[in-house]
Amino acid sequence: MNVLVTGGTGFIGRWVVKRLLKDKNQVWVLDNLANSSIKNINEFCENPNFIKFVQGDIKDEELLSNIFTLNKFDVCYHLAASINVQDSIDDPKTTFENDTIGSFNILEQCRKHHVKVVFMSTCMVYDRACNQGGISEIDPIKPASPYAGAKIAAENMALSYYHAYGLPVVVIRPFNTYGPFQKTGGEGGVVAIFIKNKLDGKPQSIYGDGTQTRDLLYVEDCADFVVSAGYSDEANGHIINAGTGIDISINELALLISNDSSAIQHVQHIHPQSEIQKLLCNYSKAQNLLKWEPKVSLKEGVKRTKEWIKSIKETHKEHEE
Image 1 (cartoon, rainbow, N blue to C red):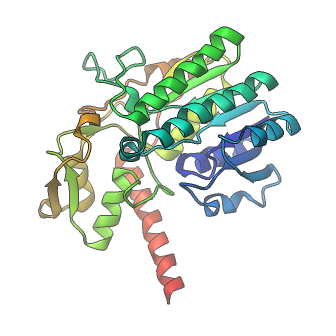
Image 2 (image 1 turned 90 degrees about the vertical axis):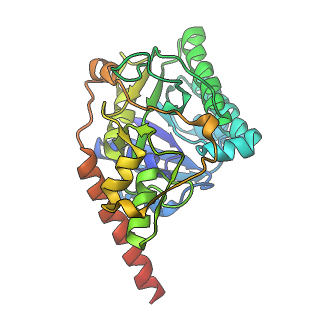
């Protein structure tokens, strides 16, 4: 297939590109590099099925029109977005323009050119699980941050294109994804940040009391899920979760990574109003519709992530020397 990946140089995006290339699809990547690096996809540039990287913005309607007109895409995996909750609270306009208006622009091009859309949403749209089996797609949503609000708005637009125009659309909600290529700084994920702190001999700072839980999904499992949604006709018109069905408290995660309770400190929460206390995924719909399930355990995933962060640190050290 001919496939466009927006946000394809980002953390999850580059793994999606890798999986698509492995499956012998022809891949185009569109990214404005605002929150990622071209280095993330350097290894794919020699692949004959990696057709083109376009540096550009999903808010640029003329650019989008040209890309879609010149290339006959079968599927668009739409991952480009502002993803930081605190940034959305500080600057809601930018998040709305990127995540809602930008997504609308993509939907319009896909409608005009009859291209299937896989829209990357987030577990941050949820309120809480209604039972012990974890959060399912029919559990209540709650726009507790402008990030979640912008994603819900874009989800609704995407599904409206399915119902109004018959456009093949899938909305996907992966839970907390971690792994190699994730940022280790303030905008990174908790696993990457904790591992870097451990390697740097720094304390693990935890927002609030640390009892909040996360369902941590390894990035290659996430990429398999994302790609599968694009391949499946049965998934069209659906919202689908992906996670592991196992959650861990932030306190337990910090201890797992640092092996030292004295290294853990609790700090005031910067956005307690947007906190989801228990994130546990019910992924039975993904199992049924996509025949997907996670393969990598948290222990193995943390090990792989730690090895990657170590290798990056060593490479930086060599360059400095």
